[in-house]
Image (cartoon, rainbow, N blue to C red):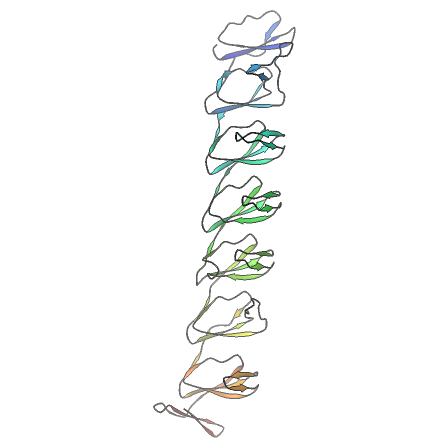
Length: 389
């Protein structure tokens, strides 16, 4: 029948031939049919098939040996595109039936691996020597025609990186990334450039990283996993904890060397409030262990890692008739007066009284005589009249 064929073998010479229809075949006594009538292979436009052990061709014609037997390319695969219907010679095998070629969009690629050494001429005009085991990508937009020398590992879908996001990548082997930076096997890094990113064949996507928005009322505490230089140009030591606020940036994308410990809210103090910070952070960025610091409102401040804030306290309001008796616990300069340890003195109103770190509050006193119109208050202290004006 039309577009059908049979294989005939000469039993004397063991040579096979193919007869294509439409025609009537008369067999001689020493000839036999190897298989029943079969349909030719039809490859429509835009499709391909793969044939194993294909016959050798020269100038489009099949090459026969001296006995008339076609020469086969053993253990070789051949990709055939749209052409006239063709038969399969007895030594040929249809490994893949006709199927559509892959259409690669601009956001995807195909991951290939070389089965053996060969000279790659795809894309046309370029020649690259591929070695067995090499892996690489072919990016869209284009039509990908399968290569018999390679195996398709997978389809790679590009990742869209937003303005506040990134990709956490890891190198499978030594490579040079798309920014031209050399990476060693196992190294991890962050890609935060907005736009489309298609990971290379030897790059592994660990996870997507979303940026954290920072504000005057929100910060993050970070712990460094390794020693590195962050995006702000500051060298961080392994195990170091530090704070990232909106003074650094409006958002922060955690680096692969950073762990986000927690979100931090600021300590907000109104006018007249105060608190004491234990182990305060110094100007050099180091904790002053064992020291204390007095903070007065109005104030908005984020607690640094390692600092300990006591509860907020509202300073006592001293009127003209009030006074606070305090005792110095250490030597310090109080204006024009130098206070010595154990010295007791009074702090008079009217004012908001916030005790210094160097003093202890003994008690509060109330003046028995107070003339507010004149701004005069009289206090009794050890039978001595103290006049406060």
